[in-house]
Length: 496
Ligand SMILES: Cc1cc2nc3c(=O)[nH]c(=O)nc-3n(C[C@H](O)[C@H](O)[C@H](O)COP(=O)(O)OP(=O)(O)OC[C@H]3O[C@@H](n4cnc5c(N)ncnc54)[C@H](O)[C@@H]3O)c2cc1C
Image (cartoon, rainbow, N blue to C red; front, side, top):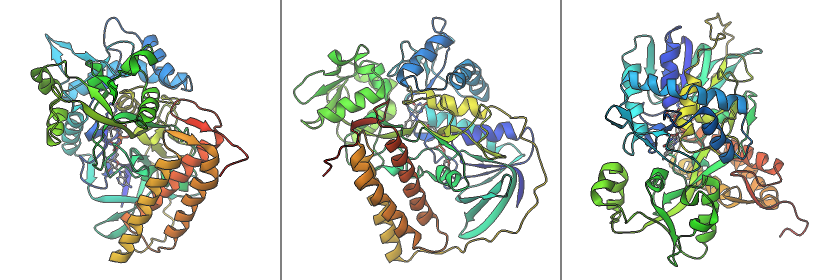
């Protein structure tokens, strides 16, 4: 199969980029489950942008820099924030209905923001955006869509990326493309506890690594402070906008512990709150308290969260909500320039898989949907159709896994997740990563390599293992704490 633009992934970045690329040529969009299955669909809080008269670009930049421990690329950050208002306007023109009152957008607040600047739709912003973008993509005759279509590997010639090898309906095929785009989203499934859905298995990161794409800031994994402390997979998120509307964190002794710890109190940046909750949990449960709000307000403002909590017999207006941190967001990724171009000609990357460097060492809340949107709005000059000299490539053979093989792979996957939670989680001991965590992951990689042939479940576990190794290696290089890379101990001689 041949196409002008191959786009892998159907979250906000893949769908939005498909609409831009369709203005220049024929697009093929593939996604490994259904179109709606994405991290985007789970986004609750909203999109940050300079929308209020009292706000400005410098202020949004300063908040992002403070949250990111000043590790952010200022040029990329300014570019994103400068284009934030027009990106929101474009979504509204497509039909996204953000909350309004008397014709004015309603804005909310999240951690690290010094003012209200987040446009939202109830507590299901991502789902609404995803729905509208899907509608647009489906009605565009220039866009061809394949669901349940898994990208296995990228095709690389001597000079460029020329497409991808895919698994579709248990068959291996190749798609040659003038330009290939990774819009494959997050990596949350690398960890035992995550808010990310099951699709977030780091496929794009792994495919990029395998053909030599440069990575950036892979040690910075953001842990969301307030996932619901119940035994679900993935963990259900209690959006930061709940704290934005006045919820406070309280420990088992009844102490509202964030009040004295940070000037922004319960709306301090995520890395600070996640670390504090992690410490508090050693002594007993931690809760969110929003009991001062009425049932009417809570059911209107947070319909999805309210309903989900009811499943656990928790009434927001009456009960404390038990919370725990969980892996949430990859701040780094495949390094790109402002056009989404990676270091490999004709390979682009947008959204959570990309390393635009706007987030620095810790993402400011609600800057990620914005990043995905603004960068995928670009149509680079280098996005030209071209003739690809199709060298014959050997395609791997598809295999079906036996029950024993499936069991073994599932076991290895959960081992990766446990190792990463233990060694490369919220607090990191570099000695332990080097002497225990990394060797254990390398052993799992060897185990997985013993399986021959191509299979989606197998490949996802291989991708998770490769990504885990990359995170640990990046963590080992950064010897001091910065943002969401928190080192409790660097290298000591008396490691046991
Ligand atoms: C619970 C939750 C709440 C969040 N809330 C907010 C919020 O309020 N505001 C905010 O700014 N951000 C939020 N985020 C983060 C934000 O949702 C994501 O960063 C963003 O949606 C990522 O978009 P994306 O297009 O890069 O990837 P995704 O939306 O994850 O899409 C990736 C797509 O790639 C597909 N894919 C992956 N691998 C392959 C493969 N090998 N072959 C084919 N297809 C593949 C997936 O199936 C999926 O369709 C939240 C995230 C979560 C999990």
